[in-house]
Structure formats: C-alpha cells, structure tokens
Amino acid sequence: MRKLGVVITDGVGYRNFIMSDFIVQSLDQFDSLVFYSGLPLHAYPSSLSSAVIIKELAVYKESKLTWFFRKWKEVAHLQKHKSFYGMNDALSSGYPKENSLRAILVKFIYLVTQRIHSDASILFVEKLQFLSFTSNKITRSYLKMLQDDQPSHVFFTHQRPSYLAPFLYVTIKLKITVSSFIFSWDNLSSKGRMLGSFDSFLVWSDLMKEELLYFYPKVKDSKVKVVGTPQFEPYIMDKYEMNKDVFYTNFNLDKTKKIICYSCADSSIGTNDALVIRSIMVAIRENKMNTACQLLVRTSPAEGPARFDALKNEFPEIIWNYPKWVLTRENHAESWSQRIPSDQDLKDLRAILEYANLNVNMCSTMSLDFMLFDKPVINTVFGNNENGLYDDQRFLNYDHYKKVIDSGAVTIATTKEELIIQINKALDQSSVRSQQRKDLVKLQISHDLKGTSKRIAQTLSDLNG
Image 1 (cartoon, helix red, strand yellow):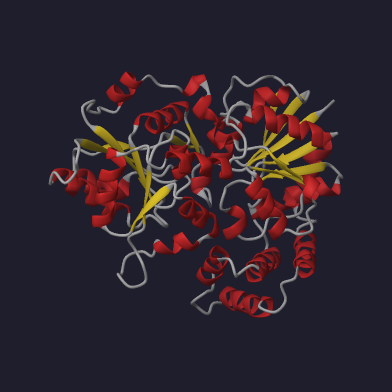
Image 2: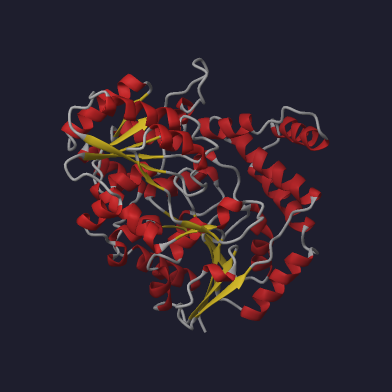
C-alpha cells in the first residue's frame, strides 16, 4: 500500500491542498491519503473519497525548555543571515524592550548568537530542542498515530510552524521519508528557521530553489524539486469560475465605471489601509480621476471587518468584499489559523482578479494574484520613520520584494498625490507593464498553473520511490 501522509496546518494550507486538485491527482499516485490536520475534523467536506482519512492532531504546547532551544536556533539563523534586510528587520523587531525573565533569556540568546550562529551550532541546538519533547505525551500520541497508519511518505505543506516539530521528530524517528513544501514566497529570505530537517523540498520556482540552497547549504540540489504552487490553481479550475454579469450583480457594481480593487493587509501591518482607502475615495469624489471608477475593498481573511466601520459610514459608496472564511475553532491561540475559505470566497476572489481593472495593495502576495490576470498593480507605502505613519516603506528593502520592484512590474506610491497620478496612468494605459508582469510571474512561479497538483503528486510519488 502506497499511503501518503499530508500535514495541513491552517486555512491557507487547506485552500492550497484541499480546495485545489491535489486530492484527485494524489489518488492517481497513491492508494490512500491521510491528512494530519491542525484544523478540526468538521472543517473538511463530507464528500471526500473513502480513500481519504482525516486525523485531527492534538495541539502541542511547548515547554519552557523547548521554547528556549527553539528560540535559540531561530535567532541564530537570523543572526547568520542578517545582511538580508528582512532577516535583520525580524531580528530587530524581536528584541525585547522589557526585562521580564523571558525577555532576559531572549536578550541572552541574542548576545550569544551574535558570535555563535554556524549551521553546525544551529543543528546542535535543534537536536536539544527535539530531545526536550521526546517524552511529551503529545509526542507519544503522534508516534502511536504514525505507527498505526504506517504512511510511506509524509508531506508537510508548511515548513515553519514550530508546534509541528514533535510530529516531524516522530516521522524521522520511524524512518519515514519526509518532505516539505515552502509555504510562501517570502519565507526563506525574511523568516526564521524551519521547524526541522526534511529529506526533500518542493518549491515554487527556480528562484526559490536558489534561495533554499543558499540559506540551507546542507540541503542537496537533487533534493529540491521545482513544482510551482497550488496557491493559484483555483484560478483555472472551472468550479470557481463566475460569469461577469453575475459578478456585477452580486457585488452591486456599476458596469459603466472601471473597478479599482484595494486589497488590505491584516491589522498587524495594515495600519495605513484606511489612509489609502480614504485617499482614493476623496479623489473619486473630487473628480480627480480621468475616468469614471468605483472602489472595491477586499479585507484580510485573517480578521473581521470591524476596523473599517468608520470608513464604511464615511463612504457608503465603497463596495466591500469581506472574505467568506469560516472560523472553525474558538479559543485557539492562533485564531487566524483556524479560518478556512468557502467555495464562494474563491469564486468571489477569482472574479475580482478577472474583472477588476487595477489593484492597489501594500507589498502583498496579491500583487502576483492580479498579475496572473495581467492586471496593473500599484503598491502603496505611505509610512516611514520620519512622517509618524506605520513604516511600511521598509518592506521595499525586503529581498523578495526588491525583485518585484526591480522587475518594473509594479509602481510604488509613497504619497496620496503619487497614488492618484499612478491610478490614472494605470487605468488609461493598462498594458504598459504587461511584459514585466508576465516576466515576474515566470520568475516567481516557474511552471504553468495548469497541472500544478498533478506535478506535485507525481513529484511526491517519485520521492516515495
């Protein structure tokens, strides 16, 4: 029996590997699938094949000792690569300002890892981290689960969540072949250490493969497979298509006006969202646009709509799209991770990408989403250290986003005035940066969207032997 174990951590993983074509294609390669889920069982559709089993993972909470070793290896990784702006930014923002016992321990870790941050030292600390939870009851339950299931391969759909380290540990202990998908385009150059060591990796692009081999030099070239990403596959699946007339009716849009879509960041970094939205709406009201247009705002699926209530009252003409993501579990330490998208939300999102004329966002992956439909994109970064706004201009220095800027595929607006000028240009001449957009998509996603899940399933089958 060829049985594939798949680890799903959150709502985005659910979208990528449950709502794409991954299950169908994987069952062509494996006799059965077992999903080890960080989401509750009721989150999954009841219509899944009988060859698919869902098992809910007990929530692991790390001990203080485990936390200490995990923090050490993550900070050491950032120290080693702090010449990269994103890594240094994460290092700086993570330095504690208070003097609690935990803060003092973190400061101690920062002090030591300034000098000691070799790969060998990081791997040694990782061994100590793994040893610290070997006898934990949750670790033992994971071990029994895998012993009972006996999957021939375990595939982690996210390489970072530290709470999955015990599950990775028991997978390795049982000598089960284990691989991981690199979750997002910014994970390698601006995030901390992976949760552990994997036998092989699946990545979005040749660029991501280069990054992985650079940041993790002990990984062999032959163990990194370029497959694309299922994140965007629903955009070519018939089940998520929406007729243009239906879209305009559902969203109460005016067919005589062009559509500007502003996609919000989450509240932790989207402090300037309201300012940007207000700037666009004032320009529309004051007839500063060259053409009649309307604003559609899509909020972050990681939060509710409450923080925009004042804007909704001030500008009732804004069309709001609150992502239809369902909260599957209350009172979770990371409640955002327990939200999953509905089929209707994927239909809504695809229609917005397909029928909107322009996207405005703050250095988001949504730039790629819109470029897949060859739509112009403007990135707004109004804040810096001098003007008192949230400093979103620093994201322009992140390595993954510098490539976006250098490609010429987007324009950057640092003020309200620049934004309105760029909106008018983009709406008047939407094809000007078309080739740059296509080139950037090719750089970030090295394969066509069509066949992504089939490619991933075949790769996992090959890795399984």
